[in-house]
Image (tube, rainbow, N blue to C red):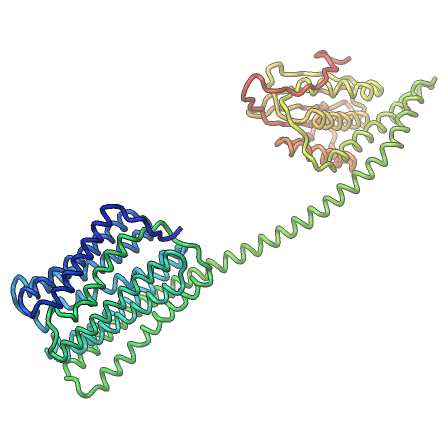
Amino acid sequence: MACEELCLNKGSRVWLGATAVIVAAQIAAAVFMRRSFGLTAFSDVVQCLLLLSGTATFVRLMVRSEGRIRLFWSLITLGLTFWSVYQLFWTYYEVILRQDVPDLCLWDVVLFLHVAPLMAALALRPQVPRDEYSGRVGRLDFALLLVWWFYLYVLIVMPWQYVVPDIPNYNSNLNNVYMAEKLAFLLGLLACWLTTKGQWRKLYASLFAMSLCYSAGSTLANWAIARKTYYSGSLYDILLVLAMASLTWIGLRTRVEGPEHHTAETSTVYGVWVARCSMIAVFSLALFAAWAISDSEIPAKIKVFRLALTLLAAFCMGVMVIARQQMLDRELVRLLNHSREAFDNLQRLQAQILQSEKLASIGQLVGGAAHELNNPITAMLGYSDLLLSTALTPQQQPVAAKIGQCVRRTRSLVASLISFARQTPAAKTPLDMNTLGRTAVKLAQAQWQAVGIEVRTELDKDLPKVIGDSNQLLQVCLQLIGNCLYVLGERGGKVLYVRTERDRNACVLRFVIEPSVQTSGEQVSSQTSPEESLGLAACQGILQEHRGEIRRERHADGSLILSVELPVARIASATSKEATVPVLWQSRPYA
């Protein structure tokens, strides 16, 4: 967003037309009227009206804007207010008191001050977005320059006004300092004009033309005063009147909405030059002190005054420089810490990417190997079932059943590996963990009946639903049942408990092996077989996708508990689609 020219409404056109009439009347008076009190009064009143009119238009812009744009217009309004106050003071002396303004006038400082807020508005650079840090440093740099300008005025002008009153030296030094200030303001406007685009460029071009016209008129008036040909309302005031009238035109034709997007390089170059200028201002104090000491033509009182003032300015500006340096140090430390953190994060990200690539390769390898293992495992399972159906001796029957159990356990492990290597997440729907547990027990019936193990279910009828993929969770349950049957076969146990319960905001499905006579009172190893660990890892991967977890608990008395915990489903309505887990098992204990 940027400044925009607006079509003038009826009220603005009338306002602008009245301003043009006033300017035309002033030009006609300067041409046709002779030097008189009436001409002086008319000219002073006209200049007051034009300045107040221009100030009012910028007040409108200030009220309609916000943020940094409002601050920008507020500073310009403040500068124009100082200018208007000085013109009112001048009019009060010449029109009301009918006296010439005193040569050594304290109000001259107001004329010098009116440029300072205008320069502050330029330093604000509202057309360029700026972060908080650069804004703080920029304000501090400009504060250094502002203090330097005040120091320059007090150093050069005021000694001839209060220390050793001298009208010629006072007027000469005041004009020189004021001219230097106007030149600096013009250079700032020129820089803003050349580095902006769009409507902002038009705004700065208009302000530059106004300031150039005013500076030329002020210089021309001072030249006429030196030649003793100037009087209020003369032709020498035409450029001043045109500059004052242009303020109304600029204020009525401009509206600000926000900053434009400039390149970071432009903002950086600007900040560097402001910092350089502020440092040059600080170092210039030593030059001014040397100049005050070496100037043998000035009175001793002025020399002492200037040295004391320079020491005071050096102290104040030195404090500001220290504050600025501390601010820069804190910012550099923050940037250094941020860079270190970013570098550490980059290293961790690279390690994670490398690990992900390794896991992806391992997943492809595992998936391919698992598919290749399915064919011989299926053949082994068929042969083991065929072997069980033949006439075997009582000693051979448990061995054949053990072979079948191990083959089924291996097939379940391979299925877990295939699921673990799968990358695409499955669709999740509400399902009942009681139905899930019963179905898993039914599907594993051939395994636990072959080894003579009893399965008992203790299911919570009021158990709420969970969200998950029924096939994946059923695979997890079959893997855990296979692990439990393997442990029971190693220990000689005969009972496996399948329980469901609610634990706060989670539903828990437990597979419990109670201590048997063989393991009761003995030290139980906490080691897990490699195939059991791999199976649990695959199950854990599935449960992580379901925001659940699997727990494996071994106790000193020999009991083993494998638990599946899933969060309770938050079903929005009763019409939610529920997963259809095939009910292959009715709720009754196995014997």
